Image (cartoon, rainbow, N blue to C red; front, side):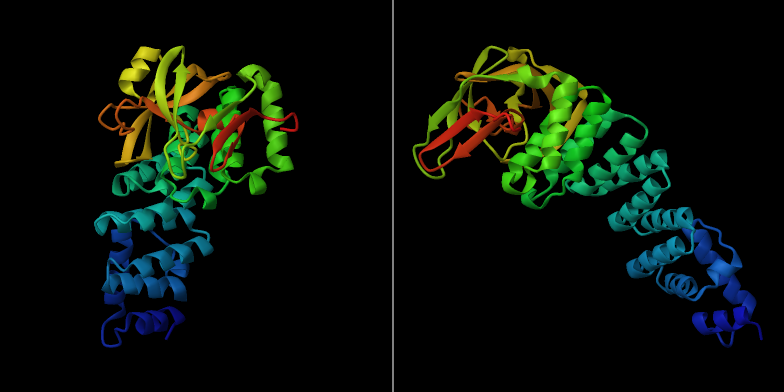
Length: 356
């Protein structure tokens, strides 16, 4: 009796059935997964056993994940991705299987297929950061940097604990801006990354990146002013400040937890902000997960300090739950350009030192 027949009889547990029936059953599983494998691959112990598990339990998540790994290890990565996607389609949508398939296809540089798959991930889990990050990687691959930027931003916004976030998203977002030769804008993600935890992230590497980008974009003139000190009335109190955006006066809440300067749509229209119609993002709001459109302000001014070319996010008036009489949030796309120190009595905002 050949090794192949013995293996099939043992793994498929059909000692009383013809071998042809076992082969038909195996082929049915392969057909459902949309893949074709040489006998020497499908008959390998780890792969054959997982195929048998999927014969008996077509939606066994452990079996499909193990099968995918087995196929990857055997050098059949595209087949692994195809099987994972087919599994998701036959089993009511499985974000984990699709995410593994997307990671495989990114390694194969099949960016078009990755975008198709990540669209499904985003549809299944619209409030999870990973689908947007993977889709941004694929957009990067086809040099569609505007869509990549929007997805990197959304991925960062939806990541729950910024203290635990990797620098990868910030660096890739910076690289996407740099690819568009928007070098000053490329500095902002790095500055935001540093601001999350200066003691950890203010390194020689981040300083070198910022210095290189500043030189390429001639960004030294992007900020001005001596500095501001804003009194704080008590611990936990909201800090309400007067801000001018493109010369239009408004009331803003100072918010170091907001990635962007956020504004209501009506205020954005009054301030004549530059808005990207294809720059829609998702972000955390007081009312849960909301949406916004990326844009840019020529100037944002707080007292004597001013920043130019400031990234903003524009929300519909109904989504913008900032409070009565509040036009927006003064977030890190402005604040990260300065040294910001907050204690129980005051917020001190100063120009960055030369070592930056």
